[in-house]
Image 1 (cartoon, rainbow, N blue to C red):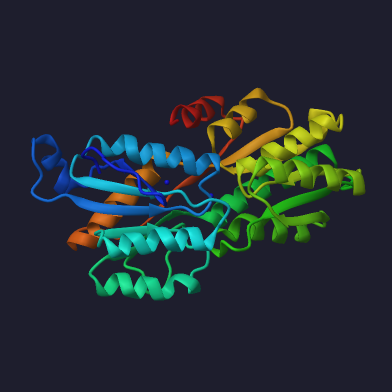
Image 2: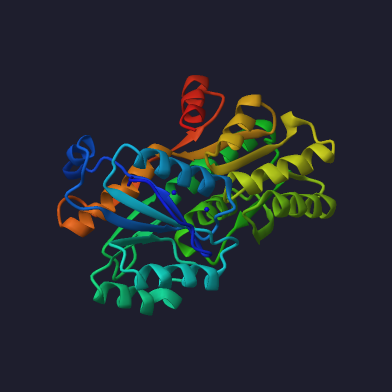
Length: 325
């Protein structure tokens, strides 16, 4: 499901935090006691309850303290609630912020608001991938993310179950089409490898991950592979597998995002074997830098943060991914 001067108020639909990052033209300004201009950037994530979104917002706020010339507004949309997100974005358009970075719950539903914002001179950037009509984008390679966990899972299945007599579950989040690579790749690769997928449902929380895994295990006792669209869903499934008494060496569970809880579960060993981790600092920095590039007309307005697979096969790198929190 990611600046600076101090903040003063909290509106009912958004949280105002100080945050700022090192776009080169403003870094020097941060060294002085005053700014030639302070820019306001709004960042809207529709799954604000996810561990990744929570961590990303903190990263943006923390990095913002080093800049001093950008104010960041963070909304509190949760569970992909379109009306909540629209309300926040409308308030930002009304106050004429300088830029908005948004992962739309529904892109077409917000297209009119995008055009309204742009007519007022507000730069509109999309999060998690480029979209038509936007002034820029920040994100990460969701196809790469899904590919990494799919290939790793299939390699494990080949070694642990050479007879292929196991099944898999994959969680999706179909309203957020920009994330489709996270489930499309596992579904495509599992089908090609003749690994049956017995559950394919929208889920991005531990609660639904637990429920989906429990239900699937009852209906399909041979379920041994679970791929979550994020670490939250996968961690819920991990609980279900433990509760069902499935031996850790007999199961493969993987998440995506690389949250601290997910990566720590990988480090503990057992069934939670991998998380496709987004480099948080890099992503947080791009939210600010790409927005400033769009506002000032200087620099790149599109950027994709790398994703890498955190596993126990490389414990030092796994520790480094955890340390970014």
